[in-house]
Length: 149
Image (cartoon, rainbow, N blue to C red; front, side, top):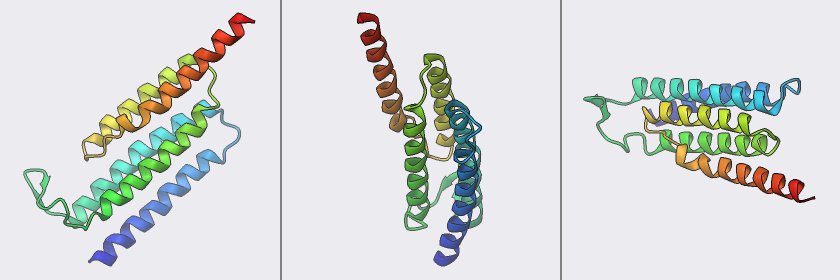
């Protein structure tokens, strides 16, 4: 059964990665549009994959996993890797965003995504807030430097 679990996550991961690659490779989209699509893909498909995995492989008691380590941490490791990958994509994309309104909109989308995935125990909002703080601080410093000139 462990090999089947691994195969399931591997196949679904490949599918998810191909969806993300299509967005990243679409150079007709602005960085803002790419990040919006990436966040939506991560939210929808990560939730689907985790829900499907748990429905297929894990038993529940009152909506909670009977044994958190029932899969040897495989699902957690996969989800952690996906969230790390999404955070890296966001960091690259955010560095290209120059408008505060777009950053605010993206932050709102990311916070919703984190809360949504939090239903499955994957709330990553604390991980990505520093990305946005760093970008806003950078834009503010740049704005002040331009104003001083």
